[in-house]
Length: 78
Image 1 (cartoon, rainbow, N blue to C red):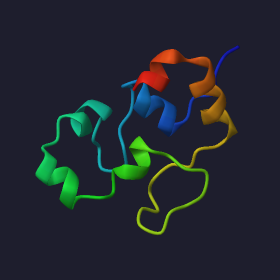
Image 2: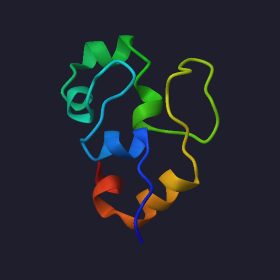
Image 3: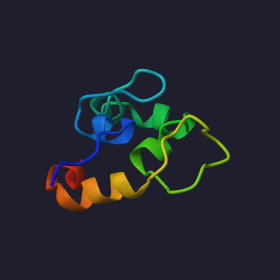
Image 4: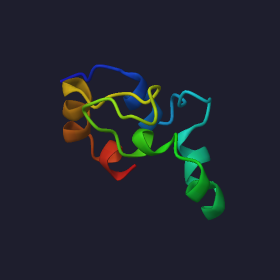
């Protein structure tokens, strides 16, 4: 089964960036102070199926993404 590529899947596979050009590794490396005071990354790390009020640039968790995460242990680990 081949998974459909989306911005969120590319981001989690370390093959894409968020809306500000940050990679998943970039976000993992951010200091606690930055994480506490910046919030536009949260829906990239914890995607949800509906648009949030705080980050209109975050991708939505759709069926393609759910299927990809279900089928790929590396995506789930990331």
